[in-house]
Image (cartoon, rainbow, N blue to C red; front, side, top):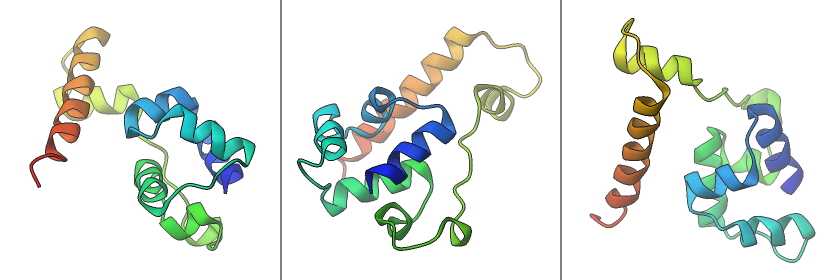
Length: 112
């Protein structure tokens, strides 16, 4: 399963650190998984599948990529256009918006 995770990171130009920060799955967990010391529990595996936009079955290696080709995450340029249209927006504002979105997602976990 780690090979699929590593391929998804490489395909999207992500690091384990970035995935850990975005998902809340610790780097230690990812490292243990990489070294074969453990396998991820289903909730964490589902969180990673959701993050990459693939099915749990794909992450587990039980479904071919052809049946569930992951879509590439939006680029910063895509986000700028979606949020601000054709207005010129600096990178610092975009980073603030992304940080607020991560904060809102994290906060929503505690409202349920």
